[in-house]
Image (cartoon, rainbow, N blue to C red; front, side, top):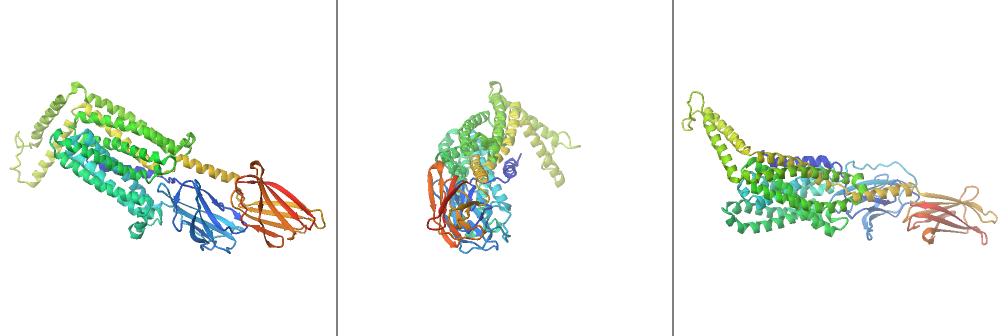
Length: 638
């Protein structure tokens, strides 16, 4: 049990890594123009990407590569966001050859998680490509694993630091002078500070190159400091320094005060200062992760701070109580009762804030079982239910400790008798064969081997005496076992909670799934091709009009029109008009301005259709001054 605090931090981090898996981030790509796999007749002027939430992209956030691997874009990122629509794009160079082009993108979502992806489209017809994309996604690899471990250890360290300090101040003032409890809080501060520093150094390669060596590049670090997450991590480090002063005061001047009256002048100052520091640290998470994006961020961020403080008070205090029960069995019954009331209040706050956060992040009943976030949330709720059940058992043992029949004086007599018995056994065990009934005096031991043997005997007897004192009260023994069970559940619960911070919320995941489903059913994988025969009624007035609308969806499209004669060759006509009408919305007719490229060939680079639906294409062909006809056909536009 001596290494219990460090063990809790380590296991929390390892379990968190195992449970996180390949969790996706908050924002996701919901659409692109051209679409993934589209084959366009002519080269588009630009490539655009649409995201579900706000993202940050660097200068090379979107790269378009030719089949040969050369850059096909201008390299200048365009912000096309409008209202709730999050869209970015890059312009393409003129004179691009036909073939398959690769679009690679990398961004950082508003809740600090890196995202990346790639897709292809073709001009003219598909071709082979020399482009080889890295298999590792943004935020993956060794750097991603180290960053995830740092994230979990920082959560665990903060929980132990804040909760252990609150346990001492609110529940057990004498704990400020108990060495195991002081070690626990110190371990929490060291873990929290070291993990925060590691996160700051790893942030650059985590969201960028993925190379561990970039963590020591001053230029990369400077770029991190200019971001919101970098500012949050820097603030967290500064607050860790203030927390060190708080811990020094808690275990220094406060611990040395003798009576309750002498401590009272420090209690209020430490309580107020500690609350401000803890709330500030919790605020750095709220301002840079899930709470800062999505629905109602102005309400979600302060509630997230309350949620984190309640978690620390309950779970961190529970860890301090477990250490105290095993390493300092003389902890007062009143202290256990005060922590029971503190934990009950923390659970009430957790229930209220957790219910709101669950609604905000999940959004629907279907997302609760149909998304990774919802399933993790159900697992967390199950663990909380188990934890509450074990906590109910612990409260039962706490009530038994407070029974009048087991008062403080009676318990103290039991412990005194146990210590007296232990002292008698010490003398008996220290008596060696042939030395008589009494203990062997230290001064008469000149043999180093014999001295070492006596030291081991004394240590064994002291350990047995401490265990006897510890186990003298059945209620204490039962409470120790139930608190240890709670601590084990807490380790897993903390891992699941931290895994939720890296998982895409159910509300967002369902939006992405719906967008992808619409794209898969309503938007064709290839351009819309329409063939319309015509007959103007005059001499040589028959032929065929072929239209190609690319990519065949709402928004900007490229339109190509070919007019062929009865022999299949390109044929020139006196006039050609094309318009689009959406009858169900009473939109149109939208006339398309055509540019004549060659005899029998027309193109329009800006055939914009504002909405999806059943559009009616109307084509007017005039072959002479008096011979003309109008033909139309309905097509499905996604």
